[in-house]
Length: 376
Image 1 (cartoon, rainbow, N blue to C red):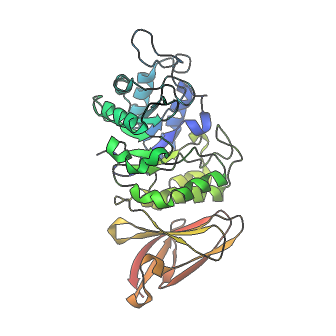
Image 2: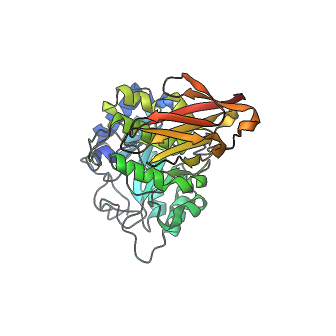
Image 3: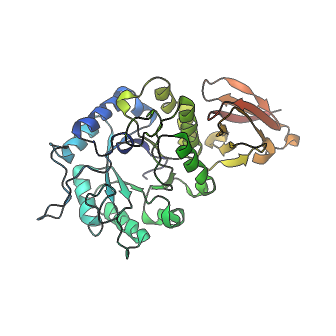
């Protein structure tokens, strides 16, 4: 079964956009291995839009890789990525053209799926631009789902219709393994915050086999690249990565991996955070608005093996105390039990609590804990 847990990897779009080529892709794959990201669970290297010629081959009808960007062809790139123990991902679109105006897969789904399989593709991101007015989006994703299943290769299907047409209600039936539920992310705090909060009531639709995709991570971009805009602080990125993990979202890096280092590398490799994201039960968190004003959230998540995750998030622009009553999550003071907290940042024991927790958190930052129930 593909996507037993949320897929993890890297996509070229956030940083490079149309400025992709063979060297950029393979250098990022090499950095991926050098930095130990596969050991942390990351496995897909995905080429996004702008990899092909502007028109299909007139004789075969196939999409053709741009020979200037990929002089050795896509099979060569795929083979080099597989040699590193990684998996190879590509991009197409359900419309007549891709979002950057390259050939889309509309009415060519089965030919394109076969072509991608011949390249050795393991992952397909499938976008939603330039749809004919008479086309039905749900049917288009059904079509590509069948095409991928009949291609002769196991290919993870990443649907990207931006949350249109109440996609959460029907996307699992198309065979997709993950689905974009939002518009595009940009590398600034407000974009990340808007996306995260928009999905609070839809997280229960995620489950093993098909996950809610809150878009690619901007962690480590610091304002560089296509969606760079203003950039974020380290605190902003801690909050973004923490929210994605609490939400069981796919963890698809979008930074230039060659420049990922220091605290940001440690963040995306944090074993406890990844364990929260990759928990086999993939349960949605319970959410608590904490009151007393400000954009503050507390999320409580059941994990397998009798553990829990508890995250305190200060999404406001000033330092705040973020608090919660444990009764919000089902723990009564009369139970005789307490919640024991261990900080995911440093592994330190934070304390035992029976009814109420209040934590000072700087602006845009968070604190996340792995928890167990113990006798009070």
